[in-house]
Image (cartoon, rainbow, N blue to C red):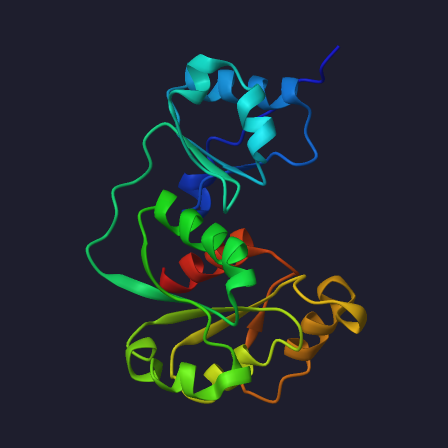
Length: 215
């Protein structure tokens, strides 16, 4: 017997951010149950950590009504909030390997109607790359910096731009990178004042922190 799921449809009213469905630890039957309940209530849902093979196993009538992106492993079930015309959030990555996490940020924001400007592969191994974009990045109220390995990018940005800086350490790296632990410790130990840090690979959490900040 599949344990029932209880959806929090009042979360948007309480905090301005709707409930998301973390698919990775759930069974296929539990994900289907979530979609059935959302469908019956005529509610849109954001699904995260939904691998392509899991998506393909969902019933066809649900898949046909979903906006799925394999790179970020996210899906929109139902119509998301209309996108804003102005981007108040910049999403920046150290390398191309960090883009899947960055796209989880962008898709979470988009589901809630927030447009984001994306700047990728501008890590500090070639400092000139980020220097070319600093002026434009500085126009945003919130900057989400996504980086693995030593995760120096958020600290550099926090010393250059005035907006809220949210660091997302990623599990990109090898050896002593330890699955992102080194990146996490690096940004937690940053000397840049006011740098905010979320958990390893937590693009969804960073997007939610940005939306709270904008409110």
